Image (cartoon, rainbow, N blue to C red):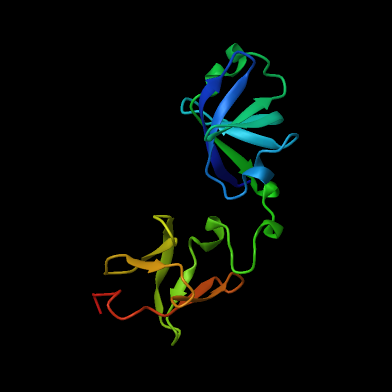
Length: 175
């Protein structure tokens, strides 16, 4: 089963077993809901720890979570720091608007130009600011950085495993 990172436990909060979480998901309301099951991965263990959320609240820039069966700070101290994840069953395409995708759906797709010539594969997605940037790994050339804007990313076909793009003049100086 695949697991997807949704945040990080950075510290404990108070004495009653709460943890401070920095969320890295676009859907914190769906991911951090009372009754949801998440998984923690500590730096000292490869084994995932299954946790059921039984308390959620916001505090400053953090989401505070409390887990069923972990009633004191002593019970949850071992979780800091931890990456927190959901399994693939927690993901739903209903969370996405038209033209939106999960990162894991995009990484690995073949990138082709408008004539159908392969340019490379998407190896990474950067989120530096206003637009995501899709990093395309190419054979014998440096990576191509494509901004996720409609004039550049023309079509994403998940079923065919390809992305059709229009590379603006000057963006690829190696041509």
